[in-house]
Length: 72
Image (tube, rainbow, N blue to C red; front, side, top):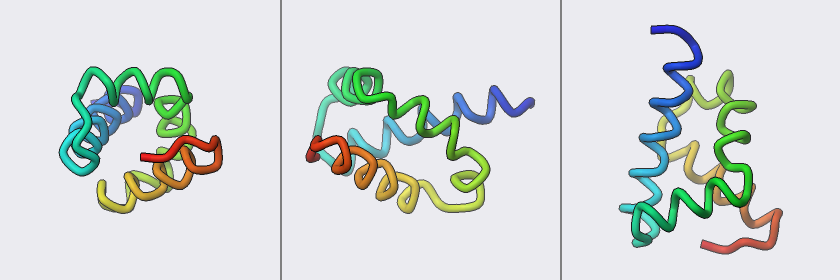
């Protein structure tokens, strides 16, 4: 599996975790991530994210969204 595939799988795992943790429907999380460049953020942070657990990564995403004045 190459890096691009690993990033996509990480993005999928984080959408699923956000759905479960935040209690938001998966299509709504996907829209939130798309609208606020979270997928880009995950790709840019991949080197750091791949050594952390998904829960820690989701917290980083939450902080990223708070910086954009989006609260989940």
